[in-house]
Length: 478
Image (cartoon, rainbow, N blue to C red; front, side):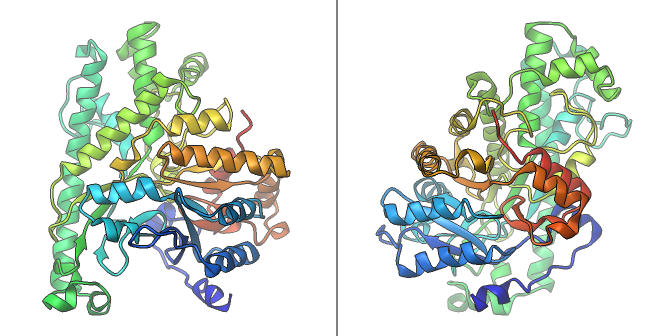
C-alpha cells in the first residue's frame, strides 16, 4: 500500500496545449494483475488477490490497475474483479488475453513474449523489458480529414488549403465519391504526421540517448546500441485515432440523408455545416439517423469500416526510424474534447466545438438500447487490427447492478463480450447527480475519482469542459 501511495506522488507538468489533451494528470504507472505466463499457464496467485484488495481500498489516481482475463481465469478471481468494479470511483480495467495476444503476434511478437504482455500507460500492450513501443507517438484528429473531404481540402469556414485538393461536393454523385475524398485526406494528413514523427525520432537518436532505459531493455546491452537507435528487441510507434464515432456516424448520415432518402443534396448538407447546423430541424433529423452502439448492423458496419480504414492507413506508413511498424490505437485521453473544440460541425448532427466520444465508444447519449445492444455493437469491431490498444469506457448505472443478481449479470455480459473477441473494457459507475454536485460544489467531493480514458483522474482536476463531457457520458439507461 505504501508503495502504491508513493507511485501516486508523480505529478506531470504540462504545457497548456498538452494539458488539454492529457487532462486530469494522466497516469502511466501501471500494475498488471492476473493473466498467464509465457507458457500459457494461468498466472493468478495470492498476490493477484492482494492487489485487487489494495485497488479496492485505495481508489487513488495512481497506480493504474489492469486486470488480464483469459479463458482459464479462476472463477473466484473473476468474481472478485466484478465485485471491485462496484466500489466508489475508479475500478480496474479489464483486458482480454486471447484477442490481445493475437493482435501482438500479428505485428511480430513471439507467442511467448505476447503471452507475457503488460498494458503500459493507459491501454497499450507491450512485452516488458523487450520493447521500445513509443506508444504515444501521436494523436490524430480523424474528423479533420472528413471535414476537408467535404470542403476541397480546407477546413469549413477557411479558404486556406491545408489538406489535399479533392473534388467539390457538387461533383460527388455517390457515396463512394465521398469515401474516396476521405481516403485521400486521411492519407495526406497521416503523411504529414509521419514526416514529423520521423524528424522527432531522428532527433532523439542523435541528441537524446537513453542509457538508463536502454540498460533495462533486452537487446541494447547485447548489441551496445541505444534504444533510440533500434537497440531493443521490439520497436514500434503508436498513433491514436481520435473521433472514431463522429467519423463513423457521418458517412452513415450522408448516405441516408443524401443518397437514400434524398431530403438533402450534398451541397445543401455542407451549406448547413458551414452555418453550424443552425436549422434545428435539419440538425435533429441528422442526429436521429441510426448510430453505432445500438446493435444496428448497418450503423455498426460504418464503425467497422472507419476503424479498418484507419488501421490499414497507419500500417501503410511503413517503418519508423528504428525499423519497427507504426501501430494503430484508439484511445483519446482527453484529446477528444480538445480536438472537438477545433473541429467544425459534422454530418452526424454535432455542432462546431462539441466534444467527440472518448476512445472506441459511441457518441455520448447515442447508445439508447441498453448494455447488451452496446456490447453487441462493440463485438462487430476487429480489434486485432489495433495492436497499440483501445479504450472502451462503458457507462453503467450502479443501482441497476449492485444486487447479487446484477453483479452476476454484468459478469456474464463481460464474459460474452470477451468470448466474442472484445479487447478491453473499463466501467464508470457513478450517479450523474453526484457529478453535477461535484462540478458545482467541488469541496463536497474532493476525492471523487473517475475513469477518463485509459486512466483515472480526480474529477476536480479536470477542466470545466472535460467535467461536462464526463457528465454527458456518465450513465447508460437505454
